[in-house]
Length: 212
Image (cartoon, rainbow, N blue to C red; front, side):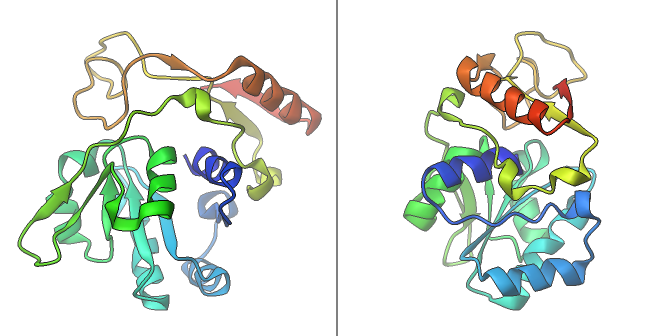
């Protein structure tokens, strides 16, 4: 999600910095230093329900550097279904996303708190505002922002050419039976020419490629 969101924003002319902290095994001091150096207006972080306590520390560090930084969390299962609990427990998180992140983060760059696809606290502190995301086709996606990622840190690159799934496996949050996920479960495909361009680029780097 970091790569595709950063790539989508780059294609729109937005200045983007990426810290792939897991791949680089970055310390929290490094994360804080990066925020100080790049001076972002918005910090977008991805998370997983099994590691969310760890993941949202990025938001805490961003607010430590500058409390005006907008902190945005994308976690596709827990956060959209338990937004009040997420925002109550993690006060440094300004909002969580209610759908796939690329177009929502682009809207945030343009409209701020008037964007769709977000959940945030009311200014009065008495409740929450939820807006569903606008329709978005993944055919609009270009290549992930490989130029911003630490490519030497990856032994394998996973290329995702589609999203969603028509099947209804009960153990899975992605398929059409996955009621917990914020993902659009309809089976969709990226543009073939973009996928071919991506495969050629990665092959030129000598990377092992697998499909996810």
